[in-house]
Length: 333
Image (cartoon, rainbow, N blue to C red; front, top):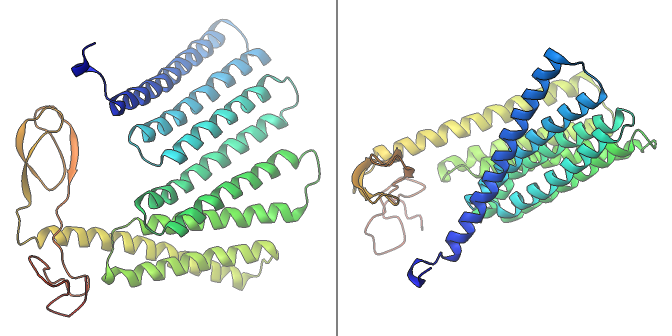
């Protein structure tokens, strides 16, 4: 191979990630196809027995974990949350091995049920950790994002401990309560980071603060009720009210953010809401609108955003200014 045609390190890494993604996709399709053939064959020609159930269970577990691994490989391909994606591949790989060992152990059904519980807990922990990893990747609220990742890891570890040791030893009730509280804390951090990813501004900061306040009030009250085993109707009503305020505040924040983004496009004064570009894949020159679009020639999808610098307090256009202070209201920027 000529020196001019040698693959760059970035291209080689991309090729490795694509091969990994292709491997998991092939494993997913193969397991689903094999499971279908065996199930149809048994229904038409044979009978169900322990071996049949184990084979079908193995293929089903393989299909599920291949799908999850493909998602992790996809995020690695896009270079999003690399540490979380690698941790997900490792943990789901270990979970797959344990699950298969429980299926083929030939013992009671309890380990299989525990494997289902562990898999469910791992999926929830991974989903909750995604907003935290994304916010940390952006460099926004790094302490909150890191705390959320730590809370997710601790919550999953303690939940897994309770799942696997409860049937064999009478695990202390405080461990179960702690697992519930840690899970609530992890979900609260994940929800907080999800709200923190929304593009806001000074005009939406008050709504963001109130939404986060009601969110943590809901989590705190739920934790107190679990720890002290409170079932008072009045507390349940307060918990419901906090939950409604949390949901309403979060939904209102999402809607207001979207409206603000639309308004920013409508208020563009120094540029057009259309832009002339060269497609980064096929180099076709074309004019596209702001927002989600795709190449007219090769179909490559991309998103274009144009935002003029405006004062976060009064929306004054901060373009072509020599002093970093809003001439309208005096707010520094």
